[in-house]
Length: 390
Image 1 (cartoon, rainbow, N blue to C red):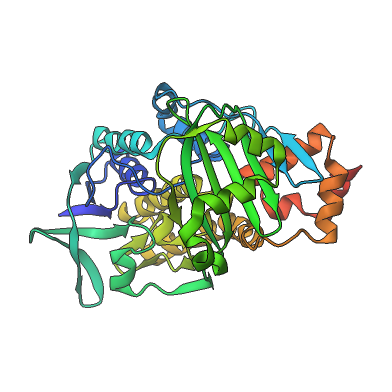
Image 2 (image 1 turned 120 degrees about the vertical axis):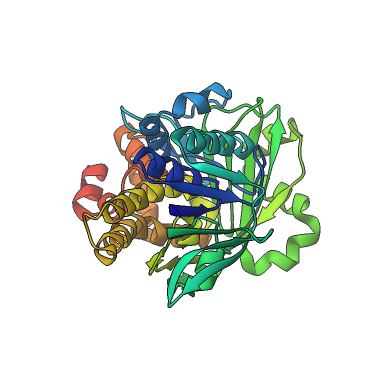
């Protein structure tokens, strides 16, 4: 009998299992994958996510993979360009480690903390008795039971399906994106390019490679599916300078595509909880997924520790977790939906971007908005906008 079973051992599940085990809770972490292994991901960790790795004592391991630090974000809107520092003095850098490296570090950290880790373990069934989740049945027939079962298994979570976790703030997929890795495309900056109906981003990663991801409206998916590379090339030509750089580079891996729905789910019920993409998914265009998963894991670990130790009733602890999650994530979610629409900026945004161009403190503030350091509610408050434009 475990205290907690966590299904899914990537960016939400492994940190959660690690944090629970560090609190002395008997934790089982399972995943159908084995590690190291890759997964579809933009894999940018913004400074708040890097700060979480630092709190957990894992940032040095990520740095040791050779993943370069990124201390500058640039934004190319065509006629207007901005560039600023995305972090804080305590956490100045972003990183974009390959998932095969990052996820292995996280899984190993969970095991080192005392969690039992089972790789190559598929979950066939979530066990429910008298309306309460009580355990899991593996694809090999193994049954394991726990006081709580957590779905950290992404958008198609078996826990979310078994419990019919209610969704809210739902929106269909807005963009479709394709990415790969190029050599001879040096950059020390996270670069974001915005054009009407198009957008792409560039970030350095391991092995002297550079991640490039480009996207367009999901409604155009079928139109461009048979010529993804041609569509990306035409997009890049809207920035002659970047087009020249990538023509001199070499794509080293195949193009991988993805699109994701947008939603929040009620993340708990009798004997179960959700974390990471299982509970909350947003378009990849703002690259907030890993950072969100880390912060979500911390929030759920705290709530589970509170209630399993007997200090707070289950519903109170988990309702508090949901409230804190939504309060933090909802403003970024709404901003992400706006960016993912790939519509030309309205007049107010044009005035704001034009007004802060060339003003370094204001451009730094804009970078911190896009890195998740600053909440959109704080950034777009009238008094703050006035201060930035002054």
